[in-house]
Image (cartoon, rainbow, N blue to C red; front, side):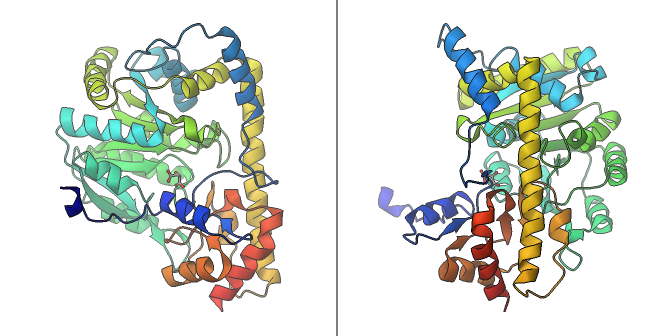
Amino acid sequence: MFESVPQAKADPILGLTEAYNADPRANKINLGVGVYKDEAGTTPILASVKQAEALLLDTEKTKSYLGIQGVPEYGAHVQKLLFGADSAIIADNRARTAQAPGGTGALRIAADFAVRNLGRKTIWVSNPTWANHAAVFGAAGLTVEQYAYYNPATSDLDFDAMVESLKAAKAGDLVLLHGCCHNPTGIDPTAEQWQVLAEMSAAAGWLPLFDFAYQGFATGIEEDAQGLRTFLANHGELLIASSFSKNFGLYNERTGAFTLVAPSAAVADTAFSQVKVNIRAMYSNPPAHGAKVVSTILGNDDLYAQWVAEVTEMRVRIHQMRDLFVETLADKGVDGDFSFIQRQNGMFSFSGLNPAQVGKLKDDHGIYIVGSGRISVAGMTKANMDALCTGVADVLK
Ligand code: LMR
């Protein structure tokens, strides 16, 4: 029976790591997957996480099941991060949060809720978007439509085209927005543009779904929630998929959250009861460790301050790598204005390299980047910069 199953294509991002691991070249560089590296080229466990883990080791008394929605205090901490501690949504008790297996799990929970409980059929995603979005939403039964986003001629957001194409989104359609640090382009709407989008969304009756995986990597923890909070000021109903893979460095702990915001506490309760039914059928209840770490940090003033400092350190290092990348390309005599790389937010740079150039970079130089031309700046170091820019200069010749 199984012989009839055709070979699947490798995953465009995680498949690259598999190919990288199998590559015997000593000087290979993996700038595919979005994983933060420090200056030594390692992906560290944050000191705040280590301390939270030490506390948990001392105080944890049981490994009994969590409830379907996860660690009890986790939702309140996540909501403070998303909405701000003084938010009226929190005061009015209008949001419900379920711990999720990573941001991807949270996206799937959102999509299942939209399809099964709201009867939604369509989601609009930016062109381009994260390589896994279409697969997650398609698996839940949504039809995926694209709205314009990136203008390769200007290496910038094509806001007019975005607005124009989103006029086709109908009332009730889901519209996926990247909370900050748009993946893969690194280009986010301005405050004014968020306002235009939020008003347009409210007038048209979209159901906004925020994919919020990089809070703290653009400007700061609070600042990066601006787009989401602008939408919340205009919408009674909204869905959010949070990931703590990057900003807590909890990649393999699969620590995310699904949050729904409803017009009232009563509606939130009823809607969330269906979310719990969907989760129970999918994976029953989540694993505890990552969410306990996040809750411990967010619930402790000292650990919180330390964590904010660590996120800042990661953000600053990535910005330094952007500067060094642009400078080193210029030193190598590469023609062209690459200053757009310094204006992009988050872990990625959308380099403009085409698939043939990306292939040559891998084959001739052992440098792995995503086929779309997305480079993980978070994986650049002073040590690998020269080899990286030599490779890029060569494929651009
Ligand atoms: C990425 O975009 O590289 C990350 O979100 C990791 C992943 O799962 O693709």
